[in-house]
Length: 395
Ligand code: APR
Ligand code: PHB
Image (cartoon, rainbow, N blue to C red; front, side, top):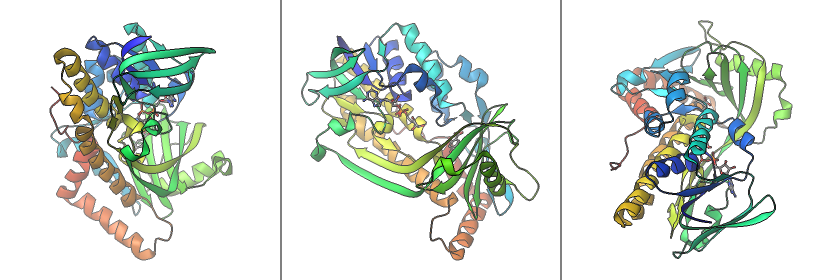
């Protein structure tokens, strides 16, 4: 096979890139090692910045998102038994966030890919990338027992944190920066009507908890657990007891209870690989960086990367210049590091660390009291949460 851009990974990054290129008349082949159902059903994040919503609209795939997505004007920080609202829209000149499951977004993107008529292979095996240090890039893989080879001008490594593209770059050509956190999130989906229209981020003495939702009938909840926690240690009743202990406020607000339909544990990590390009290989999304989910930035960063990449590839194919592609890594990383900073800040502001003392807890409460009482501090949180503007214009 020959194509212009070979895309490894059919997560949000790979699928968004494929669709942007398609609309510019640029050909791509996407390969994905999981089954289609797995990709669609995988429960992930759910907060979209306006830029991500606008991108789906520009791609002609925003109809269901506009219909079913839940626009939020604000969020709550909860501590010492009380919720404090941060009015995101008012503090940011009208910007809002939209709650829409990442798997719903992926469903819409897969429909778009099918309608484009361009190829997407699921359940590929033994994926390897070659020749990207020169101009003869090639992706090899197996599918249904047959060997395949894609010759392409560029490779987009959109294969997530555990993919093959980043490890294919020579070690001396890439620098990684990493931080692990001594806790993880236990998350559930419950069949229960959300009891708040907006997200509630809680700092409780027993640890962080987060109230979110997926639809008017489905509540999404998380709480902080130790890093090595096993989900088998948590019965549904024990999960509810802990959720309610951490989230119930003195005015009696608490999440509605309902059957748990999905549960899992996610580790928290901050990670950046620099540069995000090696020769003709471009890394995008989780393949290049991971943020802890507290700032709700992972999916939006992936969308931002591929917007910058699609712009560079479009310029290459229309004007024959590598100028924007040469700037790809630096342009993305500036925003990535700001999102890293914000995600780290939200995480350490709201979580309890092992070994924290009573002093640390009091300091943390004072921090939250300051944030929710100062317009300057709230504005800083709000402008980061709704999404910082792009550093460079996209055209
Ligand atoms: N070959 C082909 N596909 C692969 C390979 C491989 N060797 N390794 C991994 N993949 C696939 C994964 O199965 C997954 O579908 O690449 C895809 C990567 O998708 P994501 O992990 O979703 O990463 P990305 O598209 O960058 O999305 C950004 O935002 O909300 C956050 O972390 C969350 O997934 C989210 C991310
Ligand atoms: C979610 O709804 O899954 C969600 C919301 C906000 C976050 C993380 C996850 O910060």
